[in-house]
Length: 95
Image 1: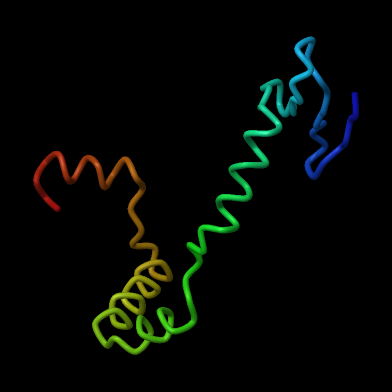
Image 2 (image 1 turned 180 degrees about the vertical axis):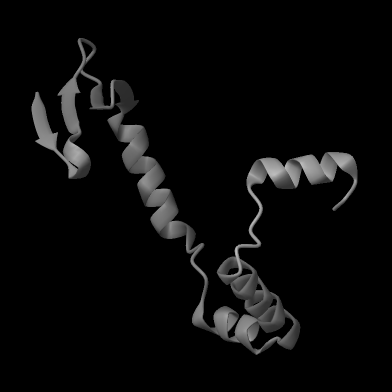
């Protein structure tokens, strides 16, 4: 078994079960090591990151820029709704 203390003081344990299956234990939950590696590789190869050209296109759109600026102003003025508040307004038909 290999133990590693990670950020926040949590302990990650890496070991093999009786069936020789590699396992990562984190916060008391066991994860299949090979499955985790596979997911990481798929995510890396997925190329799902936003490209610079997409960011530039978004930033050049006047409507999007106005929405972002309005949102920033709302945050500064404390006009931010919690998730519960938004759900409540949707249920009441306000939004």
